Image 1 (tube, rainbow, N blue to C red):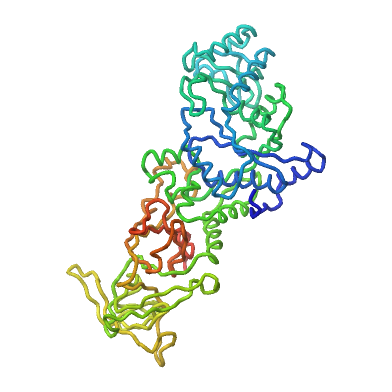
Image 2: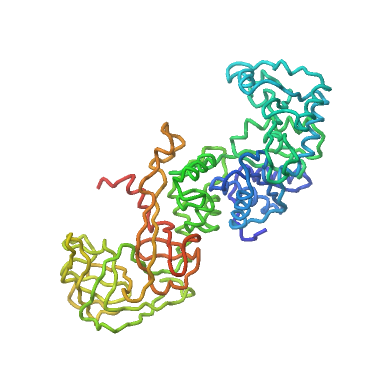
Length: 560
C-alpha cells in the first residue's frame, strides 16, 4: 500500500471498525472490497468509494480486494475492466487481489441448489410483466406466484435444465422464497438467477444462466473474507436481503454491510447509464472528455491523484446527502498546483505588437524564475524580441482609469521585461485590429520609469521564438446545479459553451514539455498538456481550472 495516502477525518465507519477491533471481532482484521460493475468508466463518485474502502483498510493495517461484478455480460467488457484498474492505480491504491464475480459462478450455483433443497428458492415461470403485477406496491402487499409451491424435486430439475440451456431467455427465473407481504420490497421473493444466452467476456459460453447482484455480492464478500462491506446508501434497503442470504447458506464469514452517502457534484451527472448515453450519442468526445466527472476525464483535464484524494477526504463520510459545490473540487486542485506548477506565459487570443525602437535582429534572453517562491523549480530563458504577442483582451483603444492594461498612448509593463507604450493601431478592412505599433523604454528592465505611471503588467510571448499551441477551455457541462434533480431531460440542459478551442502561443521553453505536465499560465489559470491529442509538433493544453472561480461570478453576479 502507498504509505502517503491521506487518512480520513473521524467518521462513523472508522468508529465502527475501531469498536470491532477493540472487541476482537474478525480477529482484529479489516478486509474491504471495491466491487465495480465493468459497464462504464469510473467517476468521481466511485473515487469517493475507492478512497474510503482502500484508505480505511490501509489505515488499520488491512487489505482491499478489487472485484469486478461481472454478472451481466450484455453490458460489460474488458475495456471497462482495464480502465478501472488503470484509474485505481493512478489514484495511488494497490489491491490485495483482483477477483471477478464470475470466479464464483460454480459456487454460487451450488448455493442456489442448497436453497432449493431447503425449500427456500423456487423456479418461477411468470412473465416479467406478471412478476411486476404480483409484486405489489409500496402501499399494498404482493401475492404469491402460482409456481411458488412447486416441489423441491421439480424446482431442482427445472433449475438444472435452465443451466443446461433448455429454455429461452426470460422463460423462467429462480427466486428466493421469503415474504411477498414484506414492507421491504427487496424481500418480496427477489429473483436471483435469470436465463441469458449470451457469451461472457470471462467464462465464454460456459453459462447461460447468470446470478443477480443482490445474491452474488454478499456471497462473494463472504467467500473473500470481507469484514466490512462499504457501499452507498442506495443499498441500505437491500441490507436485510444481504443478511438473509448469508444466514441461509453455509459460509464461514458473515461480513457487515455499512452504508454511506453517495456523492452528487454540481453541474454534472453521476449515473454511468447517463454518462454512457452522453458518450454513445457523441454529445461528448468520449469517456475521457475533460468535461466529464470520470476519473479518466479529470486526469486528462489535469487533475492530480492527490487532489482527488484530498477532495474525497474533505467532503467526508456521512449518511447525509452529499451535494458538493464544484468550487470545492476546483479549490482543491488550485491548492495542489500552487506550489507544484511552474509559471509560464501563454497567449490565448494573440494580438501582434511591433516594438519599433527595438532592433529587428536582436534577441535579449531574460532569465526568469519558474516559481516566485520555490527556488527548487529553477529558472528558464525568456527571449525578448522586436515582435511579441499579447492577449487581445489586454488592449483597448480607449478606456477609463480602472482599466489596468494597455491603451493607446498609455504604458504597461511586459511581465519580466520592459515598459511599452502603444501609439498606433493597424486594422484590416473589417475594422479588426491586427497589429499594434509600440515603443519601449530600454531603461525600464527591472526598474520603474521616473515620473510616469504605468497602468499595469501584462503577459506576452515572443512572436519569433515561441511554440504554437491549441488551447482548450472548459466550463461546466450543464447549465443547472444538479441536472439529475431537474424535471427536464438532462440532455436538454447541456451547456453549449462548455468547450472553447483557441489557437495561441506559449513560451519556447515548453518545446520539451511532456504529456500531463501542468503549468500555471500567468494571469490565465492552470493548464495541462493533453494526454491524447498533444504531440511535440502540435501542443494541446487543457485548462484545468482558472485562477479564480469565474463560473460562480457568472452564476451569481455582484450587485455592486
